[in-house]
Amino acid sequence: MKSIRVIVLLSVIAFLPSSSFSFQGTAQGAGCGQDCASCHVLTKEEAGKLLKIEATNVSQAPVKGLWEVEGNQNGKKVKVYLDYGKKYAVLVNTFIPIEQIGKQPALRKIDLSQIPLSDALVMGNPLAKKRVIVFTDPDCPYCKKLHTEIKDILKKNKDIAFYVKLFPLVKLHPEAYEKSRAILCNNSLKLLDDAVEGKSLPKADCDSKTVDQNIKLAEKLGIGGTPTMILPDGRVIPGYLDGPTLLKLMETPLPQ
Image (cartoon, rainbow, N blue to C red; front, top):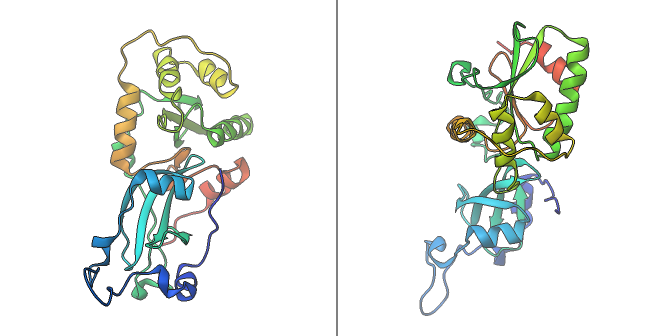
């Protein structure tokens, strides 16, 4: 899967050829006028093919002449802006209002009380005071790397517990849903290890709704990719981190 080049948004827009943006109507006959969006259509299917991502939503961007496309790429949630001419794409997190430039960005935090842990798999000491919640997919390659890092962390740190919430990205990994059900039906870290190692799993032998509940919970919390970690203070960390970086981040206090 090709990656999309990360570019500073305003610089790109400044140098895009004027023909890429349909700000003006035609001289005669029917034209876009001021409502350019009425003359341009972009479906999720077309956006996915153009941008090489799994597009989940297409809408008008805050800046005229651009589509805002949300989706997943390599297991990570992405947001891409595509011009109406469908020739230029920019990968960014969000548009920034002028008055917010230079200010400390708001930290994304989650109220931990919203996340039930009784149905989570526990890696490490269940009595540990430091708890890290991990939304993971058994077929996600970055989740597999993080799983290995977690094991290495736990070899040296007995005061941390990782609570694993299985969150299969069914559109990206069609087999992950049944694997997740099988793991949770048996409440088995061994089966999670087997899945990470690419081994076959037994079929789910229970009617547990935990996987479906995890999927709904992730949507409610605004979690769209795996792995996603939630630190003991509620900070949300999307994507893979190596062990030392994760430990350092946990030790870094929140700015006042």
